[in-house]
Image 1 (cartoon, rainbow, N blue to C red):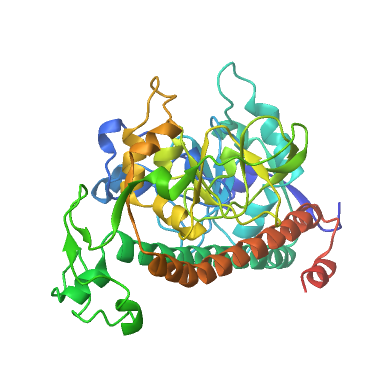
Image 2: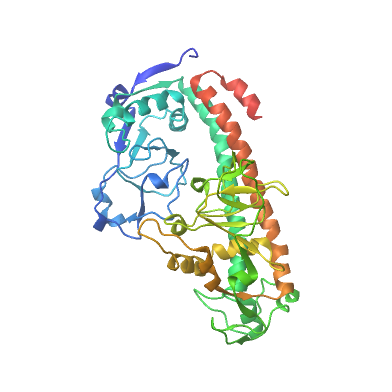
Length: 448
């Protein structure tokens, strides 16, 4: 252990008013709603927070919760069921209410305990050994009580060194977070264009001279100023009737398999080492997973770059687990869960078309309504997608859409790849820094 690093009993830090450890609010089902503050459970925590599928707690009832509402600087620890996930409440993290599956460690004196250092320290072996030693002491799911946590100890360097370590690791995490947001923004731009052209048919409405709609419809001016006239002229200027309602004149309604291959054949020999995407690493937001590992192929769905993967089993489908494959090398075949549906557009549709479609409300609603099987194990039969009907677009528009969205997906993919490299560097430095094996000056040189 490096000099000047000291072991502190958690109970004593609490008694001194330096540290507070709390657990979550035991909400009744009738207290939870669809609006208010997210009610955070273990499934919403994994390095960060994802609240798109969370229940909510009404703000007008927060007096019942007391101090069990997040504050910037809180270190969140999943202490029940899935034990050992962590997240740090950043200044820009939306406020949320803690559930009983979570505990939080709150530094009451950042001049003595730097909150972000505490977050990184909890990833280390010292804390792992302590919580694993008590987590499995019951016959039920793993659980680490507040009493167990108060009996633990933490090891702290001097405050200046805590801040320096937090600065190094935090800088890497901040860049990763910035990349994540940029990637989501770029994807949102592509999906917005897809919705405008192929669901709302805004260019057709503009050419027809429709007045602007508000707040839910097209908000153009009648001349569709955000589309160049040369692009606008590619679209029809009127609608015609179809089974799906009004569609652009000259466009066709087709069953999905006529425009998009479902589960196309990909060659991969049994036992061959290939990139593997686990269902747990499929994202509910964003197009590219953070982690892919190499494994010998056994059985599962196979895919190549440009394919779209959709989780077909509950609750993964409802939660939005979807991916666009851009993490393989040219010609490489990857594989994953048998619970994926693989989509690949047929020419002239670009590969990104299937991903944007898979993220659309209409497709997801259809898939969810098509699920079969017993409660808790329902899934979408791949053959049911033959009944999904979409509007097939003209070749010039399909090719133009591809030229516009491919750079957006490429830039988003580059951001994800950079984040993977930054995360690997962070994960290499973290155990050495929080144990004192690597001193700050050497680590700074490595980051630089």
